[in-house]
Length: 355
Image (tube, rainbow, N blue to C red):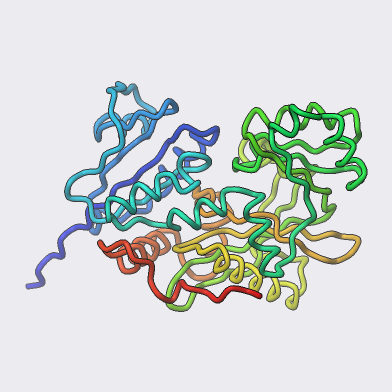
């Protein structure tokens, strides 16, 4: 008679204080639905919008859309937890904050560590890192809130001289297109910058790359799985509403318009970016293709991409041969194997500095 294997005590960590709180709940519900109850004992920890960490009963209630009670509590983990699965999008959850705390607890967790998460969350830092590695990124201008307050007219003048219209104004530390504006003319620029500063003390401005958007999924391992590119087909630009609140965007997996040569080039650049940013576990790498020049640029790297059944990351992985339930098993197994209690990063993650 076969002896049953003990269940893995998995802590699902979700919610958070960012503008993406509700998206985190959607992703967490999808992940939970694909966790095998014969393999995992699931513990729930919800973080409320104001930063309270709820107990098991109230965390489960929040995730299930039921009434819950907030009891003042700071960060904690169950004493018997084997691995943590953070499903936290945006600042406070995807920016290295939680990851650094988990590293201090010497607890394995799914996804990238503190350093990689922090670098990838900041759009400007990401661009600087990728450009230093000779990877293609759009040109950009960084603006701090102090620069803007000191001389807004000069900042607007510098932007107008550097870039033509249209352009995009982005907070550097937000996801899901939160706080981003497409600027078609000079009279829209100031209000777009003010809006971006509502979400971050640092913003960037970059020219619009008029063309298709492609995304590549990466699943870490001894031999990383790098998906074929998927394509976003949308009327307009891929803003927050088109991502989550309407049916205007169409996800095509794999892309039907990109050449095989270009697809391989995107996969190669995606994996290089993953390594340059010191990422682990999984990520989604986004590209923009300029329809006029035929050149692509790396747009951003998402260390905790959307994880619902309709999200691009699980769809790309499914096309690569990893159904949702198999995918989460692989991610959890990798986390446990690569982040032992010592908290050491596996030596294979060390990459050479690009001269």
